[in-house]
Length: 445
Image 1: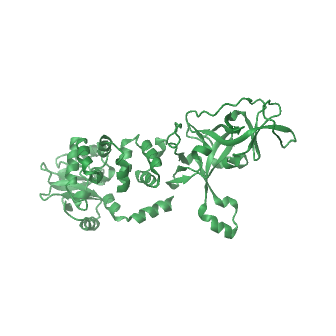
Image 2: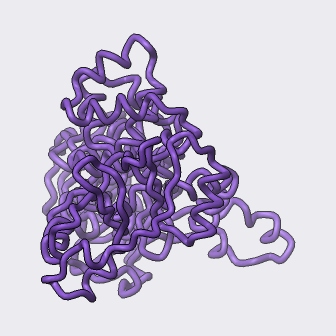
Image 3: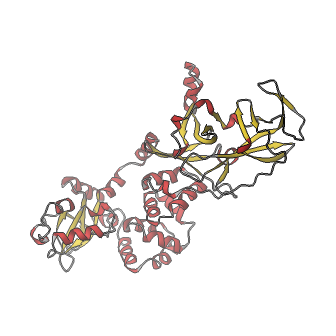
């Protein structure tokens, strides 16, 4: 990977906007049809062949995109000049090698190439950084930097619009108007360019927490959110996690454009409680056809959840639980936990049930690693387990979990059979006001 941006020589760096409209100069030995001339720094007359209207870069590696050429306008026509013919970039002109060809070719986009001004400038990009909450940033300009005898796109420039008044009052320097973002930490959207083969890289987005990806989707426009979902969709489980984190209106907006088969596949990868909430938001005409496309066991679980009021324990609970028989050993329990595909938040507690699914007690997962592997569950589980019935309302749930300091609360029916579990994240999601969530997003950006 190339050097970090702070290692670059800033004297060999130019803004993209500063390069647009610069004259392109050929050495005096080059034969061209153009007769316009300009005097260079050495009082030698060189020929102007056109002016810069854009720069082309290639986005094919996990490094700074190399500039592959210039887009030039000459006599009303556009031509492409490969970067290998550029011998100097100066503040007032761009100089081509004396042996550069006189017959320039039209620009034909090659795979993974983008026009920086036309395709990316003034568009949004995703800023991905370990120091900041992922966010969408507008590209007000770019820095093009010389590195190892080549030119690369090294940073995105964002104008600090909010500081204009204070800058006028205090006469701050022009540098304070700009915020420079290392281009290694941004991903461009390219779906708006029909001929582009570029797309968001799944491997970068996969490192972002699903809740943060959901925040990005909610702040993006339709085209941008679709491009994010296309990239995230390479991992079906990650896509489901992201959809779970979205607000209801965004969830409906996304699934309304999908087929019944696509919705069923998505719901199959979601947590049952979240999937049930989403099914309940579907139109009546689509709900039953979608349910019938979901695998039988999960379909049955969802139908049970849909029978509860969404504001009660039954509507909030997750039906996926780790249930164990009292006759097995600690080692067997640990093996079940090891191979479980459940969300980690559902594995904080294992519940002990009899053959009729009647709840007997529980064991905290953290306790298991301290116990003798040969110990039997019946000798070590706790039977003083707090429970709540499916019809209990939200205040009752919160009070019980708070009083007993519970991370997981068992939900039972009238015969004390275990039917689900409510976890602390389910409670926090409902307790945190929406304006707090939006404020946190702004503060971390």
